[in-house]
Length: 229
Image 1 (cartoon, helix red, strand yellow):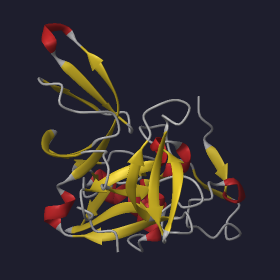
Image 2 (tube, one colour):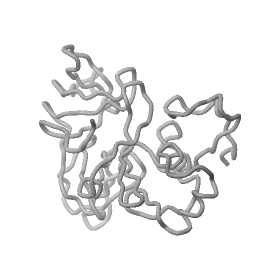
Image 3 (cartoon, helix red, strand yellow):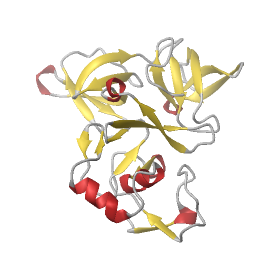
Image 4 (cartoon, rainbow, N blue to C red):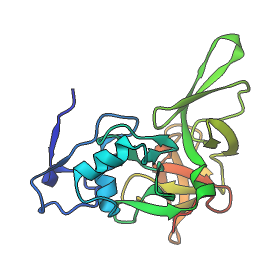
């Protein structure tokens, strides 16, 4: 069972909050995102200056006016995290990192908000030659053909695959962990043989370095397919 309270000073470093303003801060419920990669929806609304009190957040949620990835939120502590799209009052925000490792909320348009990005964590074979794709955020989808690889990213709308963005040489990636968090890079080489088979060589800021593959999130073949700036 998760703890109900969280001291502000102990909140994840990724949260863009003033830690000395309050002793306690709302803790997100367990969800599909890791604790340090998500924030409770009520806190997000406060940071976006949409509400001043938790009571106002509760009212909006009860009126089904707040959605995450197109689905109405039912709980104040619902965890929204990296690459999720938060929407209200015809406004849409995708959750990203800045280069200081803080979660930020980038406003996007409606057409982009309908496209959600899911990175394939692994695959599971099912009966009747079906294949289940398991995503980094706990979601999954069943497909007929095995034409997807681990670390590929799928653009999904209404749980239907619109596009595959392959994890391959020359693809653009968004760094989601480590000291280069929040930066955009290009894949130069994907190591396949041990002991480097969990690494990929990327180019960033005129230098080339090896990073773990799970630090990298593909965002386009030659340019980002989502708004990052």
